[in-house]
Amino acid sequence: MEGTTTTTTATTGSRRSQAFKHLDPLDFEKEVGGFDVPLPLGPKETDVFRCGTLENGLRYYIRKNGHPKGRCALSLALRSGSIHEKDSEQGVAHILEHLAFRGTEKFSNYDIVHFLESIGADFGADQNAYTSFDETVYELFVPCDSTEAKKNKELENLTSFDRALLVLSQFAFGIRATKEDLDLERGTVLEEWRGGRSSQSRVFEAHWKATLKGSKYENRLPIGIEDVIRNVTAEEVQAFRDQWYVPQRMCVAIVGDFVEGIEEVEEKVRANFSKGSASPSSNDHRRFEVKVNEKPQILVQTDKEATQSIVNISFMQQILCPGWLSGETWTIKMYRDMIKEDLFEAALNARLFRRSHTKSTSQPFFSASCSNDHVCWNADCMALSASCKRGGTLCALEALLVELGRIRSQGFERREIEAARMELLSDAEGHYADSNKRKSEELREEYVGNFLRGEPVLDSTFEARINSTLLKSITVEEVQALALNFTMSNGMVIQTIEPPGGSKPSSTEILEIVEKVYRMESDGEIEKHPDDEQRLSAEDLLPQEELSHHKWEGFHHDIKY
Image 1 (cartoon, helix red, strand yellow):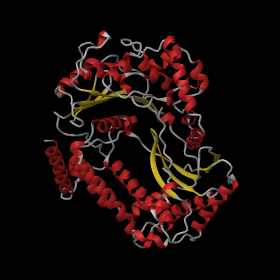
Image 2 (cartoon, rainbow, N blue to C red):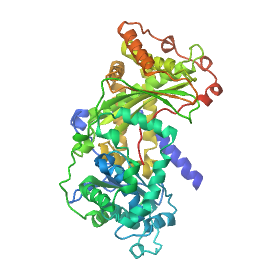
Image 3 (cartoon, rainbow, N blue to C red):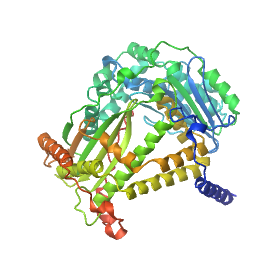
């Protein structure tokens, strides 16, 4: 039977993959209402998906999903993180997250941890919750049908699903945060803080501070500062909890193979999460906007854990995040902008691969890549990273900057964009083919993303039609125009990282390289690269074994504790 099920699932995926190629184009005016209308949440079937807002302002998402069978993924997400801390509270949001698992109004002595262990759930500092700049998120993944009695009377005769709802409601409204709890938890948080004092962590932290210079975010890394962790009082933690743990800043996302009907789950949400009322605490985050610095910032650092030289170049981009401002989902225009960025990233990464892997090219770096990461509620950061031979950061830096200049002055070859387009169409086809077997944890994260940032969660066929239609409509000129966003005046941060004992470039030398490349661009001295005008075969590339030990994963802007 197992083999038959596998074959049937594979056949269904193959049929959906074929169906993707024959989907009708989307008429955005007729079917959505235009490019500036928020996209509808999906799926459309009300017996599969429900969302709404309780009277106290708490948002909820409920989605029936059978993968994996008999399991349910739940989250409580708050639009509150380290950015809301005062100077004297740096680290309190993260401390409060820790205290949630130590004790609440109904649970004490790590009852919640015992519950998680009893159902075989992983438990750890980064497995059930995290705190970031703008949010705090608690996550549970539980069986749907266990009714085992527990020592705590509040948990007796409740299914694991019902216990999970009760636990999340306690995180929302009942974190205890007494002096005794705080004193016991300080050591754990301090240990985590010390773990972030490694040489590599300090390198990443320095880049963060430079990227966010001039904004409140610069001094609000979620881990906090040692003085506050050691000395903050229970009263201060409680005051932060009471101000920011309010229902209109919260959402509950429930995705899984629950045995109840969706209406019954909706009633359970009301029963568990209707406490409290709308608070005057502001939802306006415009006062926390980032600053895009117009002059390059230079960081020259040594990392005792590094084995090769590394150069990172990043650029800040301000964005409008509707989830924070109005609770609305992205529009078609915003979705289209995202696809343009994906095409740019795919095309540039393919270029960087050719530069480091082609036999006929003098390799300025072992490997290089670009990525576009979400930094905070209204900013993204595009980063180029390269690993190179010791002392080779100036050459690698110049090569990366020249590639950006080459796109601005010479553009992409049409073949490059078509290759990127086919790559993304293939990804969209695979996503559509597998849409009936997406895991509950993945879907839960998408609904949390909708609440926090307005990210779309769409009906699978509708999403496939949007992807297919938009990917085919975006022009080469639109994609290469994005390179204009990555210049010296767009929050540029350049960071070089050298192993111990290696020679380091000076800030003056780095700035001279930047000015040299921009002068070359303005004087029309950056020409097309011959590798971009021809198709390369496997024989044109260096053997993989010559490159694997130099692999560098790139720089990622993901601050969660």
